[in-house]
Image 1 (tube, rainbow, N blue to C red):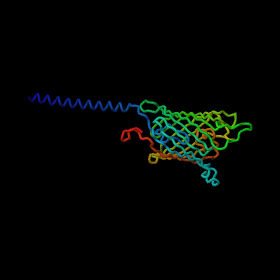
Image 2: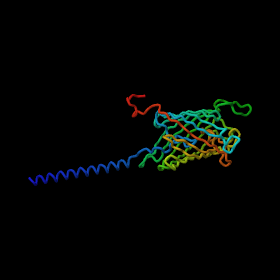
Image 3: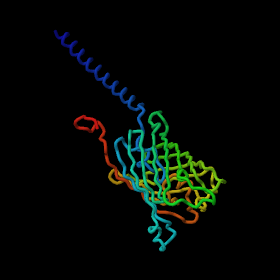
Image 4: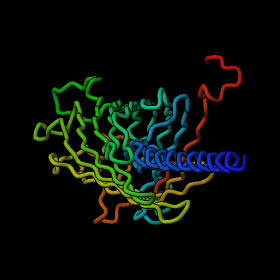
Amino acid sequence: MRKVLLLSILAVISAVSAIAQTDKLMDMLNDENAASKKEPVSATFKATRIINSSTVENLAAGVLDFRILHRFGRVSDGFDNFFGIDNATTRIGLDYGITKWLMVGIAHNTLQKTNDGFLKAKLLSQKTNGGAPVTLSYFGGMSITGGAAPPVPAGTEYYFTNRLAYAHQLLIARKFNSKLSLQLMPTVVHQNLVDSSAYSNNTFAMGVGGRMKVSKRIAVTCEYFYRFNNQDMLSFGAKTYNSLSLGVDIETGGHVFQLFFTNSLGMTERNFITQNADTWEKGQLHFGFNISRVFTIVKPKEFRGDGTSW
């Protein structure tokens, strides 16, 4: 009887030990699977714009973003225009997330009384553990200038189509770590009308932008666009320059408040890439800010209490 009892106890101990070893092995396998799982990288940037240019970030589906972009006049104007405050331009727009990978936007700009619209589609997402090394998005925009027709050569008629311009961009971004993100932006801007036949209607440019987090709520940002052609282009008779902007992102309660200095007064791709008439070399800088207010128009399914569709 004692032998049977002893054998039973040993059997129970062996079974418990085997179960414990199995659980430990399963935990190790689960940890390995979790560590090797390819997860999408989030928050490459904290806003849908670096400064002037778009980022690879999209609004969530069903989210509406009321966005105000503001640029003061030249700081170098001094007291004559109160360091640019008396000469301000504004872009007021609405951006909307249609799906998690597609967003659109429309806006009105006080500069040249321009109306613009765009769409942005996320084509590829950066992933961890050997997944895609970058996030890739396509941006396509169109702008229409308003107001009176500009001067044109004698005998030349100014058509409505002369007011149109188009921009196409590939946005290629990588989040290197929790602090540093960089983005390349090969761009082509097509203008239906340019100052002279000496210039191409298509301007090819490469944009470079980045974000470096310096504290929990503050990050330094920058962006620069280099034009491969039309470097000597005139816009309304004025010499044009490449766009350079430096700024700071401040995160406040889920929103990002952006402050910066830029030599670009315009806020559409046509304006800040091909028509930028100011330069850092002459101190022709503009102080500006971007602010937005987000509204959830359509709730995600997982947050709908009654399970009905919207």
